[in-house]
Image 1: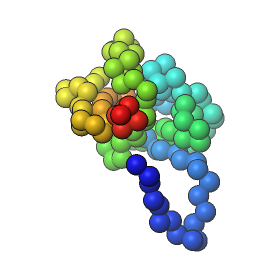
Image 2: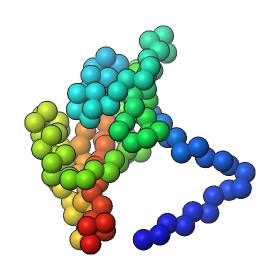
Image 3: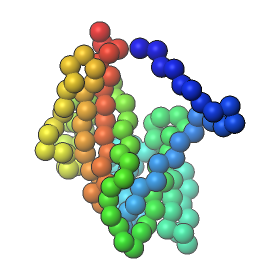
Length: 133
């Protein structure tokens, strides 16, 4: 499937993306994202309660922000994986909370798995089934 983008002539994107996630404890959040997802700490600003961790996807980072009125929700970062069942096994081995629906399959299109970080923020993995056809 070829994707066609109608981007504004005025906006020149550089391919980078930083997703901001609200957390209650910066140290615990950094440990979770490093241990569970294999992300690496880029930098942290303790006086601002902020850090960024690098994902395995080039130029895609997750910003972790300590907030007093933590309320999980908003956008759900969805990361592509080669084998969703293997990725789920890794999450289960680390006792990560998975959504009750488990792996959802849209035949011929995609497999999806929703899971939650230590603060209840939702994240997803997807496995593209169209490339398997």
